[in-house]
Image (tube, rainbow, N blue to C red; front, top):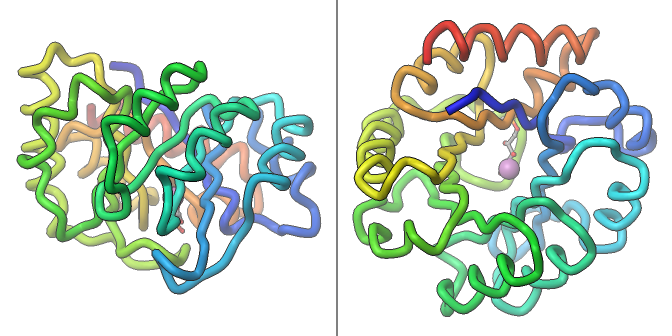
Length: 219
Ligand SMILES: O=C(CO)[C@H](O)[C@H](O)COP(=O)(O)O
Ligand SMILES: [Co+2]
């Protein structure tokens, strides 16, 4: 599976979002963190800004919904044109229905797991998703330290995905940087979210290129 880089705009300058998006033309996706101050203790942005970004961005949008009620809201993100919509397993009470709805609206369906959530109980959902997102920090904030304890779960998730045919992408999100991306790639991740490692760099395009080359070297 080819390495994909998805810069998170959480660490971008929110007053200059269109310019910040244009600064990463060599990325594969643009990762947008939707937080509602309920599922996580932080508030970011919602549907109107995602719609505006869709008009401004050349890249497809990868929406990571950290919200209490993804079953109610996730389909709307697919409907406005997000390329990928990821819901948290801890928040959804009807994941099969919601994931199917996302897919039926033409977006890729993602399932996210917090660091302490085991992957094995979700084995039967692998056929319902296009991407599994493993959080490598507790969700809610950018710039946190990568949690090494998730590495064995990345390996187990890769094994589980391969047993289901290997089509599902495995995304890691949180603390992914030049120091940690190789360990994630070695463990089997193939889609890498990076917020502070890209938007904290002076040259965002060079940061994306360097993360990609480190991940490709380690995969
Ligand atoms: O989902 C997230 C936080 O909940 C962000 O995508 C993530 O933290 C990206 O920021 P960084 O790369 O700086 O950790
Ligand atoms: Co995220």
